[in-house]
Image (tube, rainbow, N blue to C red; front, side):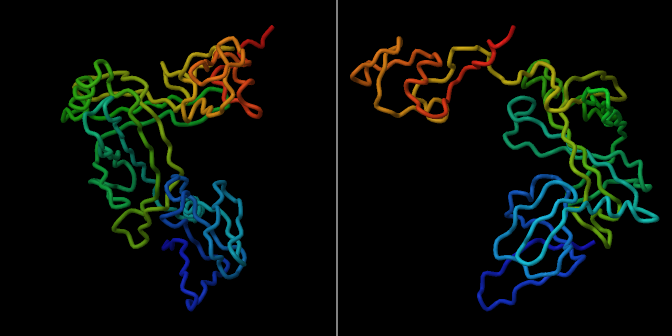
Amino acid sequence: MAVSAWSFDPDPNATPLVFSVGDIIRPSSSSPYFELGSGLFYRCIKTGTQGSTEPQWPQRLGNTVEDGDCTWQAIQSAYESLSQLAPSAIIELFELRLVSTLNTSDANPTPIRFHAGSNAQVNGNIIWNSNTYTRLPITADGFEYRNTGTLPRPTLTISNLDNIMTTLLLDANGITPGNDLGLSEVRRIRTLKRFLDGETTADPYAKFPDEVWFIDRKANENRDSVTFELASKFDVAGQKLPKRQIIANICQWKYRESGTCGYTGTDYFDADGNSVSTQAQDVCGKRLESCRLRFSNSLPFGGFPGAGLFK
């Protein structure tokens, strides 16, 4: 399915674009919604002339937005194709994105792209969105979300017959001992065979929403394969949220530092909250009361006052 990007010609003599019901569009490359990875397109559900400013595209399936006289509704082109009587095969692609200075010395590491080659009788490499995905024996499972209240922890087993994974592990451990590619990003991309490069219906934007996972640990390594356990960003072992210590009534910001405390006033106080006359005598007591003396509205307090509110 050919999908055009939203565009507007500022030339006052240009003929305004008029869209009809059923037309499909995607955000322009300059739109902040372009790189969100949602895989959403927008179908015209009300005929009209487009507006002069690109709308704020909705990120929920089925939501609508006004654009001049016409109305767009968020749709999924991949889902649309699946609803056909004989849908195209689902193609599962993976991207391994190493973290600079943590598990690679490359300042801008190129994603390592691969696929299992188990669908649609794909026997070689796949090209999609102008990127080549190398065929590599892979087993990936455990991505399903269940109603048990816990997040999935998928496993990804990758062939190691050519020692590619062992080499990556050795390089990562050379940068950070014992890292084993930990915290590397694994992106799972699913599209349909009809949207691959080379097909008459090729479309690099037609895909399911990207799934982003992180390597939590190396579960197994041998001459044949390497198995990783994946986790979501909110379920990575050893990571703290927030990443600083929770202290009830002690501010952790540096006084008068831009972006944190940010105080630039001329009301000066000492550490005990007494008024002083010069900035040289001005010392923050790092308490909530110290913050209240300097700010009249919202307080940029770097502590956690609510941490002490318990019975």
